[in-house]
Amino acid sequence: MKVSMEEIGALYVSFMASGCADGAPCAPCTNGYVEECEEGEAFFGIVHHTDPSGCAVQVAGFVTVPYSGTAPQPGYATLAADGAGGVEMSAGGQGRWVVAVDTAAQTVTFKL
Image (cartoon, rainbow, N blue to C red):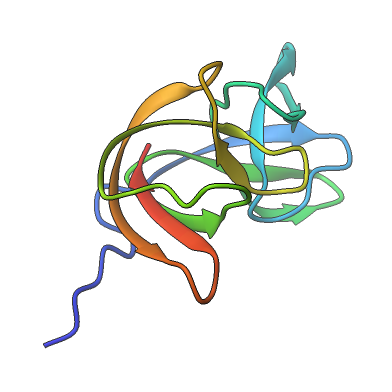
């Protein structure tokens, strides 16, 4: 049996976005807008489905994104944006429940 967390509890919110890439951690910057987070910054959600009119931001549920630096371990971890479209372990981040880490693909699955 394959374990999958895909789409469990996913909640998406529409925002306007400036230069956000799909899969990147983001945070609100002005009314109704989000921007990609810089390295070490706590993030609000993960950008999905960008187009010229805006984007959907996943703000709840399980998500899989790239990580850099030290591999997180399953359990409670403090994650922040890595400034390159993924996340990293960082004291300046937020606590998240990590459920899976793929060190070969350098991805981490966690609950927003």
